[in-house]
Structures are given as structure tokens and as C-alpha cells.
Image (cartoon, rainbow, N blue to C red; front, side, top):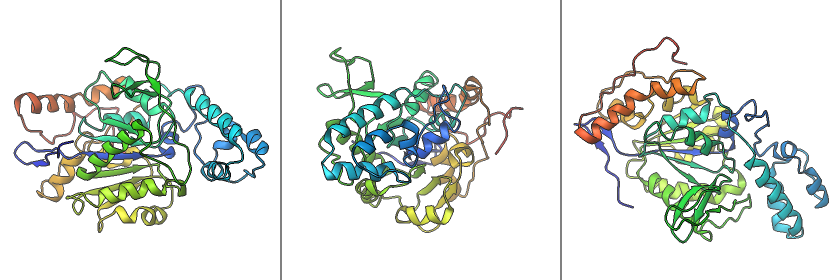
Length: 354
């Protein structure tokens, strides 16, 4: 992949990407009251009880109460004594996550997707389909960020021969053969991110974007012990980022601030970080689709942009209409070279800062 251009002062645009890393906490934030059918969306701490796989764990002779699913699965895998049960467990997990449906009201994933541009990247560790469902319902609105699936996803399938990525149940746009569902990468300490061509390609794309990112957001990702290698891979390429000393790191999580800062301190330069409990109060919603520009002009040009908080609404069409002026600006920049204005979207009675 070619090196990306950066700040263009004349056109008031920062071409460097905003990268967002998602963990299970982000999906829980998108569906805090459950999915469209009221099904609880699990995180790793309560996955065993929510999905109801305790019977399989009992068959395997494992103590599971009060334990994180990642630790349980890693123990099952490393003992290598419960192969058939592991297969049943994986089938049950795939079936459960495949059945989840995103609520119809605007939620954290809608705000996330609409707040980013095509130059930006969302990298998710989650298996569930909710992010993909949010993406698909905004697909006709305008250019949306790229997405990569670092541990596979039940809603994503591929054609390895044609190197095509699409939705589960679709056919390849090149050879017209059915796409093959991606395998899910389960929580073991020694994961192989290179054996599967799809997973390898997703990680290559993340590394490229991290190397050039100007803003890094970590949303609901707790960097568990079974992801130590993954965090180290991200840290290694983040250290190679030429603008890291200027870049901002923002963490969106409900955990204690001191705990979060300690967890992500290796990624942070001096005081270039922020911690928020929800996406509505994050930089993503403060300067949607302009996060890298707003940050660069405020810190490098002493030219802070006006606040442009995304409105707190439940109606998806209202949210889509609200960002239309930003999309029109982007089109004018691309087609006519007209600089971005940095001006907020028109005030509306149903929208307010958080």
C-alpha cells in the first residue's frame, strides 16, 4: 500500500486516517438493552451464562463460574483433551452470534460509522454482526470508513481465490461463486495471525493504517491476556508512525480512568490522550468526519474549529440528514478542490451537545 499524504493547509484537509479499535464493550454499548429481539449481547465476562454453554464446560470437567470465557477457552484448548466439545462449543457460538440483530434506533455503531470517512479505518476483534449491520444500513448515504475483522466475523465471507471480501450468503463479484464464511479466531494465548489468508490480509491493512494514523480511538477493548500478541503487533507498528508524537489517543470505556491509562500507556505520548465513557462525548462525535482536521488545526495551526456535536437522536434518517452538509463538502473538495470550511452543521432544535 502507498504512503498516505498528510496535512494540506490550503485545502484544510488532513489525509491521515483515524483508526478505531473495537472490542466487545463497543458492541455492548451499541445494544445495551439487548439486540432487536431483546437478546443480551455478551461480553467475555458473562458470555458463558448468556449463551448457555455451561453444560459443555461441565462435560469438559472445567470450573467456569466467575471466570472469563477467554481464560476458559484457552484452558480447554491448551489441555487438548476436549476436542469434540470444542467443536460443539464453536458451533454454538457461531449460531448464537449469527442470530443477533441490531436495534432499529440509532446507536453507538451508527454514530461511529457516520463519524468517519473513507480514509479512516475501523478494526474490530468482535465476532458479532452488529457493526456490519450498521454499516449496511448506511451504505447509500455516502462514503464510509473501511472495516477489518481481526478475529473473523459471522457476517463476513470471502473468496480466497479472487481476494474478495463480502457479506455472508453473497457471491463473489468476480467469479460468481458463493463466498466462504470467515473462520473465527478463538481466544488462545498463542494465536497465528498469518496462517489464514483472510486474517493475514486484515492485519496487514490495520498495520498500514496504524503506521499513518493521526488519531487512534480504542473503544471497549480490554486487551485481554489472550490478545497479548495482538497488542504487541499494534504497538510495534504504532511506534513506527512518523507523527506519533503529535497524534492523539482516545479511549472510550466505562472502566476506571487510572486503570485505562495504565493499560494503554505504551501507546500514549505525553498528555496526548483522552478518556470518555461513551461515544457521544468522544472526539468522534465532537468533530464527526473531521476529527483529524480539527485536531491538526487546533494543535498545529492555532486555528481551532467550532464545535460540531452530532445530535442525540434515535431516528436514523434524521442522523443521516444531519451529516449531509459534511458529505457535500467532501464531494466539493474531491471534485472541485474547494477547501473544507471547518464550520459546524446547521443548528437544529432536536440536537444538542452532550
